Length: 367
Image (cartoon, rainbow, N blue to C red):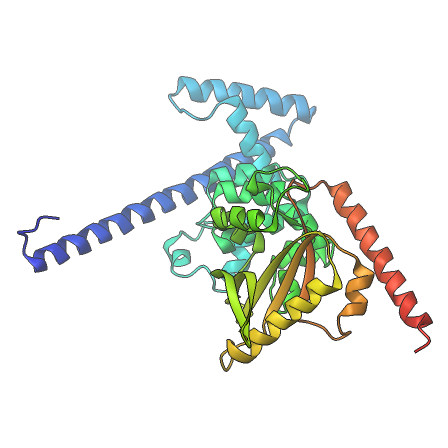
């Protein structure tokens, strides 16, 4: 900044540069969206020609080879045989266009960007070609639809989208809910349990599973990679603080991590526990939740939510320790490596067995 510049002129300069910057971003976004639409239309043309051949597979491959050669001679760059195959795959993966664009447009969540697009736009303006290249690698149509909706709604970068795919977010959420609903609507947050994933995946911390890691070290790693941890937590989370002190008649206690969820309009307290969850851990979290409800919560805010993150838990112990109508104290496991679908299924089966044993205990309890 020129210290001798007139303040009015300086403000004018800042406004003009802001306007130009916004215009450049809009142009780039519009060009990106138009190219995505163009690639989809090229893919549709290839499929339509391919389907007219007798030996469709061989005919289609030959058509793309000849088309790529002619385009290259004509000076069209970026349209190699491999690129054309991607565009064909793009149309086959999204034959009706973008699920996210239709859904979010109908919900009026896109804002002014919708009206800026032409009537022929079939894809959400915040998703570029590299997003769709990542989405095409998802073979499950329901999962692909879910990731597209969430990527558009949450404005995920390509890196964030790929991370959510690799961490099997759809599969983890589908274990406790309706996969078809997730595919059609994305993730909905309407009650405390909707924020839970089991397990939470903390592979971004960059440490292998080990017993020597201390809780404070794990907390420090999370703070250092807070952006990634917020992505894993999910929708609506804002960081409030760490080691939040709770003082009761001179005794001090500390909540590991405090967040606020804008959707649920409530504090969310997170305590990190190494090893197996104990009933003392649940009791401690209950104390923290009670304290925040009585001394931190404002009028109109929802009740505080407490999440105890542990590396191992006993579902039967949790069920017996907490009240049957409990909605505030939640427990979930975390792991520091990416899961496989087989691992998720195995954990779901273990949870069901633990829940059945706890239910059997309730029935046999002589009290």
